[in-house]
Image 1: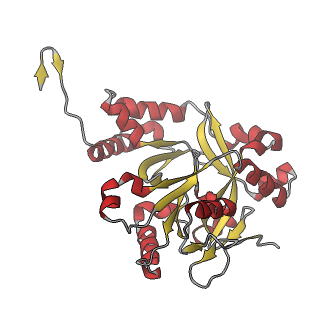
Image 2: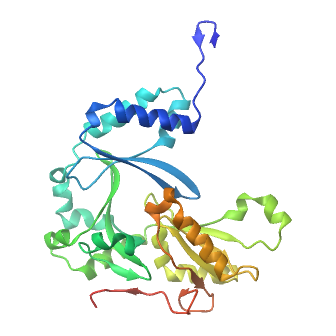
Image 3: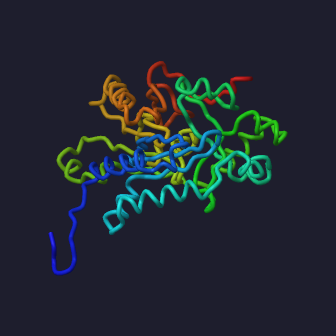
Length: 314
């Protein structure tokens, strides 16, 4: 359509934009042919983000780009080609090799303030866990990462392995002590999903409150589950007991106890999330837990056993 001297082009919807973007960077960008490129859906803050991960072979860190960011730029007038060139230039203009980051990684003083903890699924990561220090937490594992936020290389996280511990001449206990201390810098947030559906709340006064709990930080936030005191205080403040569903590495669901909710419903909900192929990379647990505001700790829903963090080497 033409208006005066200006041509107005109909914009692609998001799904068609992703298809066009994927086709162009896959088949039209020879500069990226030596890179390993993967795409991953990240479920964060009740929203799916579609990431493009570009890794140079042999490197420990890879930048992540999101289709949603490029689509916003596209709607504001940028072409798909301009978005792809921006992504390609970012990757080509930066050296993500181990040698580039070696000075940072090899210095304990430079990384200790950037150490964070992350919860991952134990069984899905057995091979990787053979190389890194970890703690067992139910059917999950607690690992330590170096969180990077540097204008020259972007944002990312590198898991601490035993090689780095040897370089730093530090033991596992100190590593976890420092990482857990650092987590105190980040706020935990709980968002009530029913606040976004006022009509349902009005029509169904018996509907249980459902909270999404995570760290208010730019990295996976389900490790908030390790802060037992926060959950106990939260339940006491709400004067309610909750079912605890670790739905992904990014977040945990708290579902208020309700006489209409039975165990099979909760396990069915978690199984449905874990079975979603788009979310499988972020799977965290097959277990449902229970938060009794009068108890000292979170427990397994079935069996009443406490959920405790354990050192596999102890």
